[in-house]
Amino acid sequence: MSTDSEQVQYEIFNRLNTGGTNLKPQEIRSSLYHSKFYKILYKLNSLQSWRRLQKTREPDLHMKDVEVLLRAIALLQNRHEYKPPMTKFLNDFSGFSVRNPRKNDFILNLMTKFLEACDKLPHDIFLSRKTRSKNFNVALFESVVCGVLGDLFKKNSIEEVSLSARKINKIADTEKFQLLLQEGTTKRSNLLDRIKLAENVLGQ
Image (cartoon, rainbow, N blue to C red; front, side, top):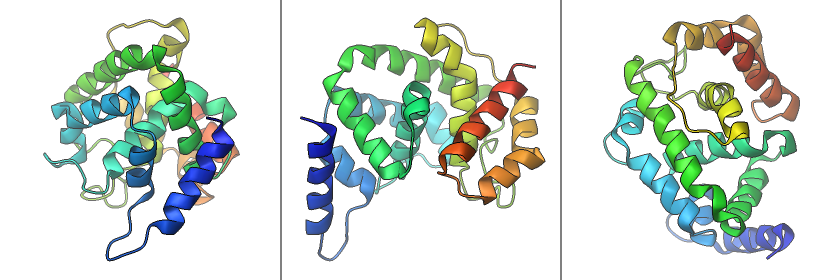
């Protein structure tokens, strides 16, 4: 099935999605692209190391946590192909992953290594600097994932992952990073600049 056809299906499903409680984009996506790749997302979503960062033992009913993982993995693999809107990018990547399952086990192992390394970080490391007790900073998380795992993904290599809380805090507190969050978080140039900034800081 072509990505255009998949997007049409998503839009039809979205327009028919009426009733007492409308489904969120990730709930629709999970229904349309059910596959081994999505089972991997659910497995990652259930890991204790990820639940610790999410500050809740139970998965989100509307799959917001699954969507965060999907965003990070999609950008890790295809960030140079990214263009807004983010919804379409995630739909296209979901369809791509259904048709190209050969990276599934590699992604599971790579992301598991990353999340296990997060156990050594403060539990609130990826929370918003303005409201650290509540909001998960998706932009920071996906930037760090791409900055840390980018080379390993290119090399198709599974290695131990080392994370530095000092460097992650430095990324988050950098004035440029804060500005890139204020000027449209899903704008292509801002998104790529955030990842580049993370790569530079993490490589120091």
